[in-house]
Amino acid sequence: MPNTLIWIPKRLVETSLLNIAALNPASFAKYCEQEYVHRVNNAAAATVESGASVIMLSGPSASGKTTTAHKVSARLKQIGIESAVVSLDCFYKDISEYPLLQNGKPDYESINALDVAAVNRAVCELCEKGETPIPDFDFKSEQRTRTQTLLKLNGGVAVIEGIHALNPILTDALPHKKVYRIYAGLREEYSFDGQRAISTRDIRLIRRMIRDVQFRGHSIDKTLDMWDAVCSAEDKLVKAFKQDADILLDTSFSYEPNVIAGFVQDFKAQIDPSGAHAEQFAQLCRNFDTCTAINTDFVPKNSILREFLGGYEELINN
Image 1: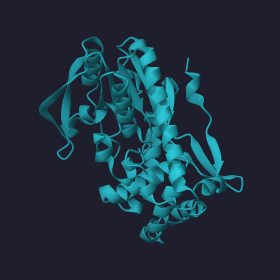
Image 2: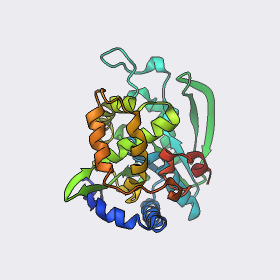
Image 3: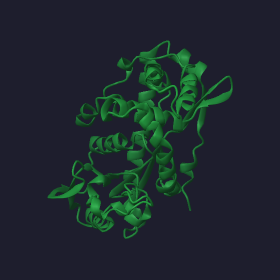
């Protein structure tokens, strides 16, 4: 039976209220960040109470799942429990072994692009022995390497993150009580004049745009070209298993639309006005225009928003 915690309803907040709070951006940002820390602490405490040895943490694109996994692991260490984060990306097969799409191209999103048997073995060994070798994957060549890293938990908890983390095929061999499942997702949307204007999917899209433009060399149009396929894949591969989670960890930040507003203004000049996505992006911009911009200087260096804005390495190291 699905855990009722997963069905926490989304909140709908008027942008006018955000703008009032944005008059004092330092306090607004601090409050939102403290709320997120509270959610992380609750998730870590629930894991300890469950007695699980492994956390499987998933979420849709740009939900902040990677940084959230590190945050949960850090909290476990803070309360005296050994912990480490493992990315399912480490378990990719060689690209020549990936399933193919109908167009003949490799299907990067398929769970069968992962070495499922190796994941099963690693998860079982972490639960039974407290240690396991983790493979290395070279993303430039898209090949597995011959090296491995021995992960030792010393009685602690491994946090395994990735889009397929909640797929039961990865943990079916384990006793249910050994695994705690976390779904990381946004639960706050925004309205203007009583009408929903900014959805959680809009927030995630802009997060991805910011990251793609700054760190991946993608244009706004390229991100928009990919977005429908990304959402379709996550509906089938991520959200399909959402009801199996033990807890939903909210990765919303009420001050984020105000931070995003500044980026949207800069992005307007980068969209092709005659392009296929011009009107879609124009409407998105109009919706964020209802938010008073907050400077990114008010975003703490240890915020998960830094996964998209920059400062991610500093975040993980701290």
